[in-house]
Amino acid sequence: MSTLVQISVLPEEQEDESLLLSMALRKAKMTKKEVREWRIRKRSIDARRAPVKISLQIELWRDHEERTGIHPFVPQDVSNAQRIAIIGMGPAGMYAALRAIEGGFKPIIFERGKDVRSRRRDLAKISKEQTVNPESNYCFGEGGAGTFSDGKLYTRSKKRGNVLKAMEWLVFFGADPAILVDAHPHIGTNKLPKIISTMREAILEAGGEVHFDSKLTDIRVEQGQIHSLQINNETWLEFEDVVLATGHSARDIYYLLHKKGIRIEAKPFAIGVRIEHQQALIDKIQYHGDDHNPYLPPASYSLVEQVDGMGVYSFCMCPGGIIAPCATEPDEVVTNGWSPSKRNNPYSNSGIVVSVEPKDLPHYTKDDPFVSLNFQKMVEKACWDAAGKTQQVPAQRLIDFIEGRVSADFPKTSYQPGIVSVDLNKVLPALLTKRLRKAFIAFGKKMKGYYTNEAVIHAPESRTSSPVLIPRDTETLSHPEVKGLYPCGEGAGYAGGIMSAAIDGINCVDAILKKHEVG
Image 1 (spheres, rainbow, N blue to C red):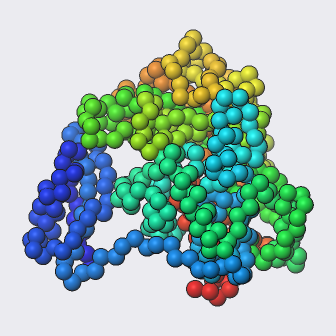
Image 2 (cartoon, rainbow, N blue to C red; image 1 turned 90 degrees about the vertical axis):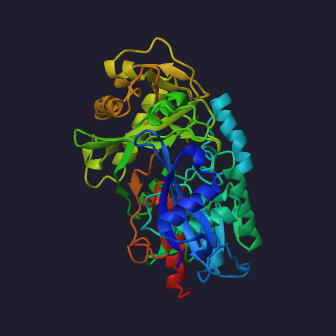
Image 3 (cartoon, helix red, strand yellow; image 1 turned 90 degrees about the horizontal axis):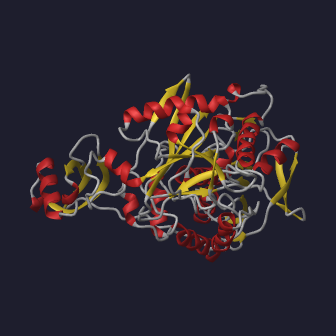
């Protein structure tokens, strides 16, 4: 068994291996002769006070102790194996497919969108022509919503499944091994598409199938068991097991399930705005003035405040990032954020969102599964109208928002379609704005300098998670009323990011393997 010790060093010392080893040995009360091998196991930034430190967990092995390497993806030839249908090729669907291959089942993926390369052209049209393709956008297509919206891999879902396995598969398919070390791992939107393409190639080489431009349009259930699926309003295909991993924006799937009498429920979600500061300001605040240190990465932040009984918090914070247009329909606007691998853009952005319970929403009734979804749609449509029915978004300087003034002008924004000056207090529901105003004032007290009129609010940040839950049995992970239907990932309400969705994809296929008594 290895020995783990914790040390802290100055940023400029983190590459000095002899110093790190010396400090680790002293902490472990070991000599250099006793240690055969060592590595940095975890790395994080401790910026709670000046000077900023780098916190490192060091792992040491003696001569008789075995060091295990990265667990590779080990495929089987599943060309003629039993089939599993997977609806959606986001992280949940891709990892479900990989786990199926590992377990000896043939995954057949149906993805409504395009392959990762073709998606780029449709994303460019949103920014340049303000044209939204409902089937190919930031949310739909190979790799799912995470492909072009950052590739952040941090998850708190340690109890949900094998996080390390999911991370190691990413490294196996081409990710930087540093993601196994960093406390808040990040791949970057510029690098993630290549990794996703490599995963797809592995699925195909093992005998799996991937079908793009293939939208689930109907479901047939017979005697409480999934029977068959209709694709593109044409082809019916029979499947005994279906992993439904359609993502948090596939609203048509919720309507389809409800129409077919398959139970769905409204669930809590979060909705708000996305705020943009200059990255240099966030660096100065977080690094206590040591903002030009070349050994420190662009700074991030995490903020949370309870306001009038609801949580308001930062979401998907993107250092050195860009705000992206993420609508999935032509008559709505949606923002999200992403960063390239180097996080070297001059802007910092983050969602600032309000936790919303269905019971707190207007028109709430206990039996309405769409109350949260309808509220989400209402906000997105209102913002679209306010910005002139284009993919521009309504915006306001931070202090102007607090004081109810329409901003006369703006600093430069990273949001390419452009912004329109409005009073967001008149666009967004008071349920959100009154809490956002109080939270921003509180955040300004926690981070001196954050509360500035040079910060710009873009609205809305509305796709934090699914507003609908597709129930499933806690033991079998199948829908409680439809055997063989496995609601999975963010779209079903069981994940909140790339890694938690990937883990849930593995878990769902594990449940299928268990049902078929396969290890």
